[in-house]
Length: 439
Image (cartoon, rainbow, N blue to C red; front, side, top):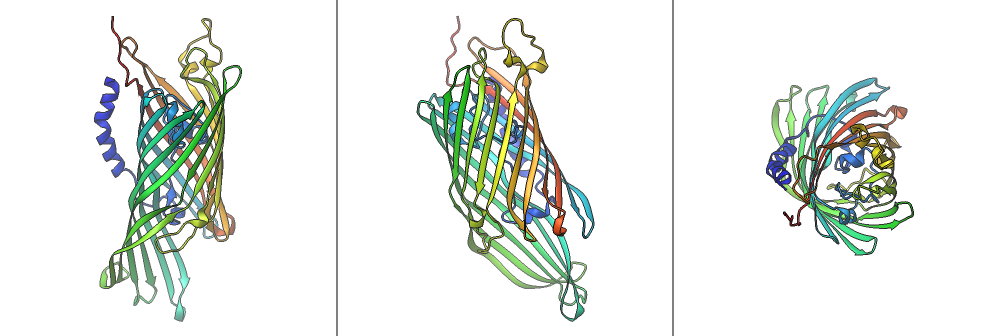
């Protein structure tokens, strides 16, 4: 209990860190589309398994990808995660090769199991991110050369309350209620070679609104301590309130403002987030001695995103329908063969993870629907449990994950992104809602 209380005391510090984390600068030109690049919602443990999570049931780790899984939480759990990404963008015509990076807090979550049939949790996570700086040249009237420069920054965050309920033997349902909020700032600088009509447009859009996700899981006990589970998720279309502030300036080539041509304040609109659904399967083998642990597990997920139903605050849509496939698994060597004669070195207690994913993204550029694919690796490093009172339960783990992937293509003059993402997570477990007995 004392361990978890220490975490509670430092949560405001990490919340402040999240708000100030690396959400500035140019990261990806593809973040210009929609409301930005969607950030991974997977915790570090699941990230190492390709993100396959919809049917995963875990008593020691929070799985908000499917809120129905919260009924499996056996302990009060705190999770904190950071991400560090390195992105290389390449283009053949014109020849471009440069590198960007992005880092920050990825999630801050707590899960509690007040009753055997009820699990609940709260989380704070980034939802989307915009960070781009794009310049193009075109020919205007009277042989005037026009330089267009587009820049964007900002993004949306979400606060989520999750609940899972066991409604029958082996069957659970759940729901996530998320409040989305944030500001996206975009600029457009038009530089004419004549220097007479240079204009600068800046706009800031403040978003806020609710999003709801629903999930279900069914688990079936097989022979030889095998557990087969299936998961379903559904997110209904959601509307976000959008408040637009826009200004249009006449400027010099050096950027000095000459005059304000137009200004609009607090124009109300809305953006529509489309429907999503997913289905997953997971097979795991229970440990015979550590009842709260699995010796190994393997999962497969399919996600569908109806991007063609997206609507921006302008009433336009630059996305299309998409799907994503995730596959991955894990193994803990010491739990494969249990008994008094089994070696118990630390490396055998580590959980080893591997996975992969393929996505037909909702982005269409130059008539080409972009693909995103990669492989993942992960480690679950157990931390010393320390001294415990009689009946007290504590379990801590450091989770590491590495993603190597590629988005886009060099065909048709497009930009190809190669990226390496590192995820660091900390999981702390304690037993609450239990009275310890001392003799």
